[in-house]
Length: 116
Image 1 (cartoon, rainbow, N blue to C red):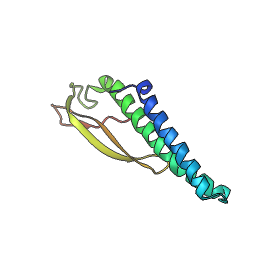
Image 2 (cartoon, rainbow, N blue to C red; image 1 turned 60 degrees about the vertical axis):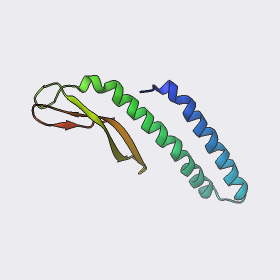
Image 3 (cartoon, rainbow, N blue to C red; image 1 turned 180 degrees about the vertical axis):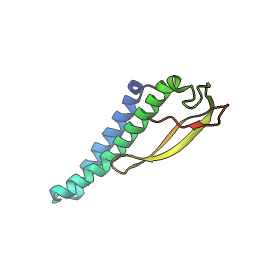
Image 4 (tube, helix red, strand yellow; image 1 turned 135 degrees about the vertical axis):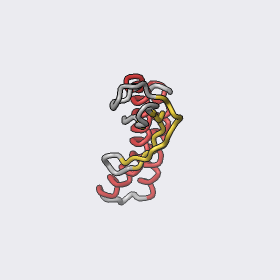
């Protein structure tokens, strides 16, 4: 799993593209109101925010996974059962898809999709 320093270059590329798109939008809408400009900027920045949330969350989950390898119910070591995807909503109502190791307790069957 790449660390956040490795993701910085990707984030910079997304940010540069967003700046170009906002500039192009503003050229098409030179008389836009403050609210229209704010909406356009927020819409574009949401993509970068989502990517940063996804990358940061998945990195945190991967780094903290070793601390959660025991079942909270019975204390038995959890087993990885492949990657699972889950769609979640951010506080701002934006949909994100996260992929993480899914853990299962071989004794009591409790499953865990590690939170971020």
